[in-house]
Amino acid sequence: MTDLYLEIGPKKVFACSYDWPGWCRIGRSEEEALEVLARYVPRYRVIAERARMPFEPDSFVVIERTPGDTTTDFGAPAAISGIDRRPVDAAVAERDVALIRASWELFDEVTASSPEELRKGPRGGGRDRDKMASHVVEAERAYARKIGVRHRPFGLLDRAARAAMRDEIAEVLSKPSDGSPIVDGGWPARYAARRIAWHVIDHLWEMEDRV
Image (cartoon, rainbow, N blue to C red; front, side):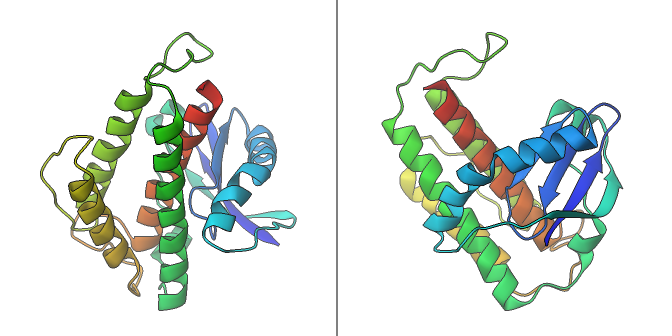
């Protein structure tokens, strides 16, 4: 079975996988969120294959429903589920990091091969390539602080700084965890892995769709 949790906001619902960081989709109801998640199986398989992992999800099983908030409705998974607070062993932590690294690699490749000006989104908006890539990096820098990793702002073309930050994020998240926040006021490791991967993947797929 494929274990999922639902984050239920006032108007929107996220369906998210526990064991596949970043495989997380939104809908206007529980049913729609699950349907959208299923439609993205082929696209997430590309990420899993890059991490050299077979990805053949079975029947969905919702094992937790957790309340969301206005951030959920805005379009980001913001709730820390109960299972995120369980201990994480080294094998699970290293697996999560492999999937995050695969997401980074694919996002960077798609960014490099995409035109600067992207097609407008369904509502006529959306960032162009460089602004989207900068947004992803700046979000990662903010997320990194939630696990005790701090880096000064750096430019989009500063690949050394980006690699150093990502390596430090990966180092922290690859360690076993007791399920508590990694730093005071921060995030548990599994939630951090899921949120970081989701944000990269969400924009990866957006960029692919708007080329």
